[in-house]
Amino acid sequence: MGMLMRRHYEKAGPDAPVADGPAVPDGDPTETWKADQLKAYAAEHDVDLAGATKKADVLAAILAATTPPTNPDGEGTTPAADETPTDDAPTS
Image (cartoon, rainbow, N blue to C red; front, side, top):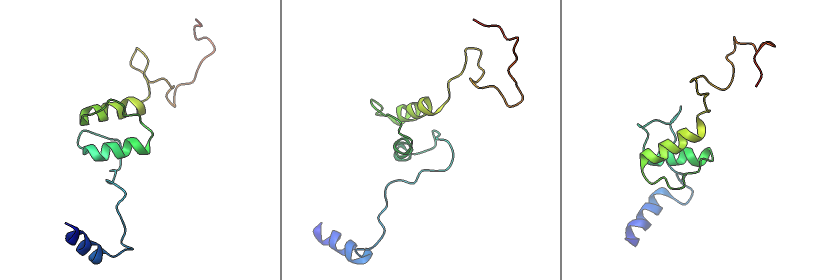
């Protein structure tokens, strides 16, 4: 094995670039991403993967951490660009 490693090192050279890890695809994570890509995305976005051992668990943890919460009526928590708050809104 040492001989193979030495041959690879001699071919690549000491200054050859070393891959830092799997490349993260552009866009939001989906089930088509590989587990290593999902874990790299989570690391870049400080997503806690504690307890996530399966690819589906990793994706669920990422989506839970990066998806904004919604109101019970299914609407987002921030008003749309064309919605302006009114003063006659009911207060609690």
